Length: 160
Image (cartoon, rainbow, N blue to C red; front, side):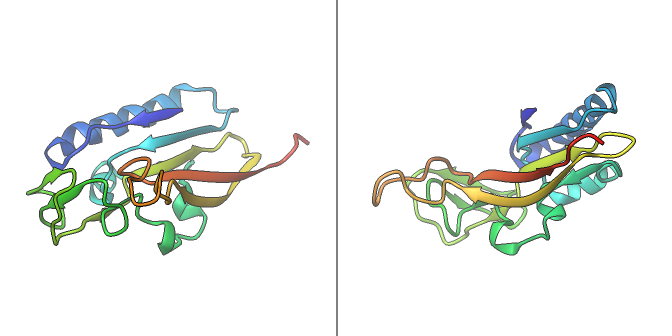
């Protein structure tokens, strides 16, 4: 499943509703199936906390693979200069425009991979979370996106 939730701070309430809807969709799918949802959630950790966090049967792939700091930020303006922003830490007062250099360089973990494990027991484990798209398309040009791509690997166990 691929998703793109509403962006920017002012749409926090809508984004929380969208995430809650996605998690309800998880509940509507046969519990014997594992679900993997990935995409640009535009999600702040405090928004996830505001809706009560993830259900116990849903895993965040970055957390499940050890919270490696080098792959934490999928929107990282310290490393990715496709957009330049001027704003505060919460992105509350921001203006972004291509090509304009600013001193403030926000970093967020907007892009996520969520796994809803099957019941009674899952036969899949996430074993790696990484970032892709870290190289410029051509030397000294731009990156593929203003977000890094995410890539995950899984261990799938045969039915017993």
